[in-house]
Structure formats: structure tokens, C-alpha cells
Length: 305
Image 1: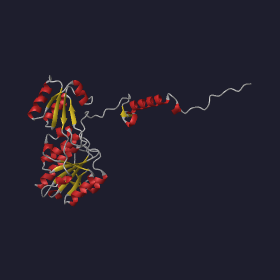
Image 2 (image 1 turned 30 degrees about the vertical axis):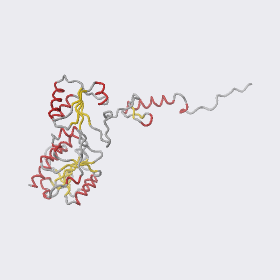
Image 3 (image 1 turned 180 degrees about the vertical axis):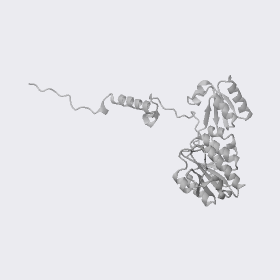
Image 4 (image 1 turned 120 degrees about the vertical axis):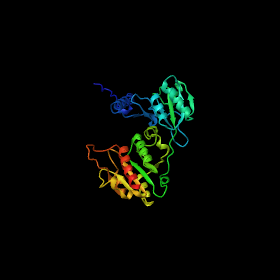
């Protein structure tokens, strides 16, 4: 009986012609289920459908120093930003028939913001496919101060924020800082809210008068303030002293405000000279960070006066 000729060794799965397509299909399915971007050739993110993922930045907008101007898009957001005094550098318009667009053009003209008429295709490219409704405001990148620049006068009052990720909360804190005479606000450089259009709007324009500085390491910066003669108090529910009893606040003082949910980070809390609290006899367990900062700064202002 003749011996049957075999087909040879079985090839590995990755060597078969269908392997790449199956892997791509699985990745797309996983991305649709989890919301995670897949990676395209060269490690470039791709959407669940396999298209290159949008960077969320206006095309060609990156500057030589790495800063990317923020774009506010849409009729309501743009007119609200201009009403709030958000510092714009250019107003792009491709449709001027809407009343909100006309008001935006007038507000921009009153503030000396250049107006550029832009075609729809160019507007689509500029906004990277965002819903723009024919109008976009380019916001100037914010120039942060150096943390040491906030040590002004003989008795500086500095507000430091820890764990604040919502720009609107940051803007509200800056507004309270302006109301009660703080010399400036310092924020962490990473994993924290920065000054953008949302912060400008909630600050009600006070970002134009209160400097905001970025610290590479907030705990280290607080220690530097302590060496400069400042007393550092952290606002925390675990505090053993109420904000009304901070007698030390009448000298060089730093008030540290944490997030509503997590409060102060462990390292930041350990760095503070004292933890202070706002007594709340009511039913609320916590306060919004902007509200808490306002209450504490009022007490600090009262003690300092």
C-alpha cells in the first residue's frame, strides 16, 4: 500500500494570511466595548473604526515653544467667552447671519481682537472637525508666573490648590482670591486644572488681576514658602482648628485647598504646618472647592484686618 504524502508542519497562527485581519477586528470590537483607542502603524492612536484618532488640536496651531492655543467653538460658547472677558487673539467667522455671531463680532471689535473671515472647509480644518457653527475664538495661551513671584510685600497671602481638576473650580478660587486680597494662586504643573477659557469665565475676569503660578512639585514649593517665612495651613475635614481660629494667618500665609472628593494629598497634608476645617452643622458632608476657598479666605481676610 502506497504511503500517503503529508501536508507538512502546521503553520503558526501569526503566519497565516487571515491573522492580521482577525487581530484588527478583535481590536476594533474591544475598542467599541471599552472606549479605548486602538493603535495604528507607528503607534499612532486610531478610533474604533480604524481611522486615525483626532488630536483635538487645531491643525497647524502648535507654536515654536510647544504651546497650543485653545479654540472655543460654537455660537453660544464664543459669545459667552467674549462677554466674560476671555483673552482672545483671533475670531474666525464663516457665517455671520446669526444674532450671537453678530454680537461676537461686535464684542471682538470693541476689544481689538482681529477678525478673520474663513471658509467652511478652512474652519473645519482649523477646528479639527469640531462642531463650530461657523465661528471660533482662538484664546491666547496663559502666561504663568513663577511661584516665587507671589511672595510680594511684607505679608503675602497665597492660595495653593491641590487636586483641583475642574477649570471652573480653579476660576472660582481665583475669584475668591481676588475678592479677599490674595497675592496669587499656585497650581501643580501636572494632573491639575490649568488656566483655560473655562477658568477665565468662572473667574469673572479676575484672572487678569490675580497671577497664577505653576509648581513642578507642590509639596516642595510649600516647603520653599515655609523657608521664606510663610505659615502653611491646609483646608481639610480632618483639621483640628476652625478657619475662624487661625490666628497665625495675620502674617505671611499660604492657604492650601484640596479637591471636594479627595481633599488634600497625603504629602501635601504632611507638609502643612496645620490642618484647618470649616465647621458645618448642616446636612452637607462637603463643600465645593471654590465655595470652601471663599469661606476660608473671608476668615483669613478678617483675621488679617
